[in-house]
Length: 105
Picture 1 (cartoon, rainbow, N blue to C red):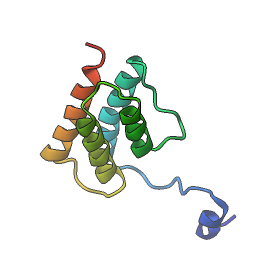
Picture 2: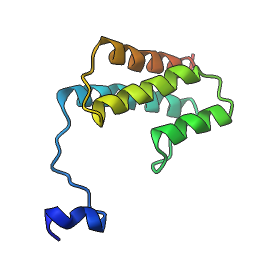
Picture 3: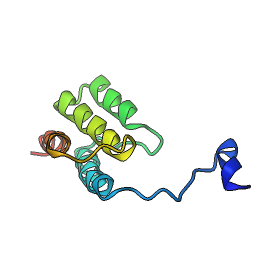
């Protein structure tokens, strides 16, 4: 299958390298997800971040849902929207991590 036609066959283009900002955002996201998992709220492999945030809210998990959702949105803006990991987005990710940590404290 040629690269040009790979999207028709469900094959992802693996040649896109994440930016340094995206890699840093991913590290914080992984900490958020790991912390939530250790608190008994693991994200399933197939769930999107939006689906996971909705599930946390539906299960009435005692967490700052706004902080978690905003962190997920900021991550996606950096990773997929090619936005810089500026002070505001980094702050959103850190607040999401703090919210996740509140479950285990």
